[in-house]
Image: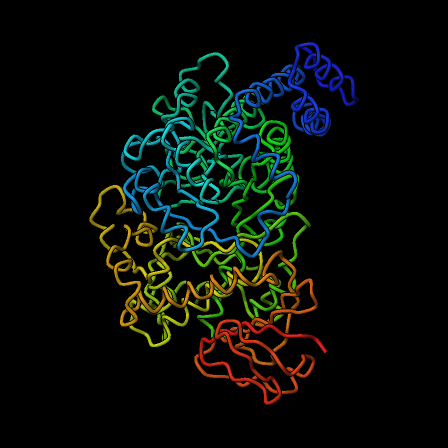
Length: 629
C-alpha cells in the first residue's frame, strides 16, 4: 500500500491512469479541476493511513463510472446549472416538504399531486425519508436500512426516478434526505460489522467494554435521553456501539476511508436517479474525537468538502443542504459553495416563534442584522416549522445584550408553546424533556402553535406573518405542505404504537383532505389562510427584490416591529415590516422620512403615501416597494 503524499505526484498519477484508460473528455476536464482539492482534503483526513492513495484512486474511479452511467438528461441539467450557478437564489423559488405516505399514500400519489404543486408555485419538493428502514419505530425513516431501495410501502426506486423526471419537467427540483451520520442497525453494513466480516469491522465505532464509551461520554451530550443515556448502546454480545440518536441508529466511522467511499457511492447513485438536492442530515455529528463534544469538529467540514468535490466531478448540478441545529456560529460554518450551498435557517425559525410569544421582535431583529449574511453563491432555506421539533438555538450572548437570560428564557418559551404559561395562545406538545438537564423542545403544527387550534383571534394572522418573514428574508422559502390550509395537530399519534413515544408525530398529520376541500371557502380558516399565503407567494414570484440574500435592517422604532429592506438592482427596494405584537402600531413620518413619499403596497396592489406615516395592525405585515431619498 502507498500512503498519500502532500505534493502533486498522487494527482498526476491518478490523472495519468484516467487518460490512458480512455476516460470521457468531459469527466477528465472535471477531474483535472476538482481532484487537486479532493487530494488535499484526503491528505488532511487520511494522510496517516497506508491505504490513503489507493482509496482516493478508488473514489475517483467510482466517480468516473457514475459519470459514465449518468443519464443524458441529467448531464444536460448539470450543464445548465453550471452556466447559471445562482439558479436557486431567484424570487420564484418556493419549497414544499411532506412525508410521502402521509401526504399522498405513495410515490404515485406524489406524481398525481404535481398539478397542485404547480398551482402552488413549488420549484423544490423535499420528500421526507423514503428509503427502506426497520419495521415499527424508524425515527420517521431516519434509520436507513438501504440507500438504494425505497420503502416498498411507498413504491420502488424506478418509480422514484420516474417521479424525479416528471418533477424536473414541471420545473420542480427533487430533494431527499441523505442520512449521513448513521444507518439503521439492520443495514447490510451494520450486520456485517457486528459479525466481524472482513472490511466492515471498522465501519462503526464498536468497543469491547465501557472504557472508551465512558471516556467519550465525559464530553458528549445526550440527544434522546428518553431512548437511552449517553452516546452508546450495548449489543447483544456485550459490546458497545456508538448511537448518538435512537438505539437502532448506529453512527458511521468516517475515520475509515472505506466508509467515505461507500457513502460517496450512495450519493452518486441517488444523483443518477434524478435527485437534485441532498439534505445532509445531522452534519454536526459526523466526526468523533476523544475529549471533545464530537460536534462540529473541523474534520466534519473537511468531509463535506471532500464529498462535494466528488459530486462536482460526477454530478455537478447537485447541491448539498446543511441540517445543523446548533449554535448560530456553527450553523453558518457549514455554508459555502465548497461545502453546503444551501442551509436550513434554524435561528430565524426559532426567533420568529420567540417574537410571537414575547410580542417583542428585538431578538429576531438583532439576528437579521448580525447573522443573516452568507457567502456569495449560497442561500438560506427559510422555514416556519419542519418535521422536527423546535429547539431554541439562539446565542446566549446575543440575548444577554438585550437583558435576556438564555436559560430561563428557553424554559419560558417551552412552557409558553406547550400551554403552561399565562397568556399563551399555543397548543404545542413537549418533546424530549430532560428533568436532569432542564432541556426540552416543542412540537406542533404552525396553526396549532400560532393559536388557530385555540380559536385565538390572532391565530390566522400569526400564521401569515411567520410565512411572510420566511418568504421575504431571502433564499428559498419552505412550506410544510398542509400548513397552507391551516392543518392542526394530530393527537391520534398517541394511539399508534410505533409513534406514541415520539411527540413529533403530533405535527406530522396525514394530508388534511377537508382543509384542501375548503381552500376556496373564505368562510373557513383553511380558505382564509390559503388565500392569504398564496397571495404572498404570487407577490414574491413577481418581486425581483426578493431574489438573493442581501438584507438591510430598518429600525421602525417599535420593539414589536421587525423591519428590513430588500434592495433591488434598479434602485428600488422593498421595505418589509412585521408587527409581532397584539396591538396596532403607528410608524411615524420621521421614521419613514429617508424614503420617497410615494410607495406601492405590493400585497394590496395599491399606491400609498408615506407622508403621514403608516399604521400596522396587530400581527400585520407590510411589503412596500419604496425608493430611497
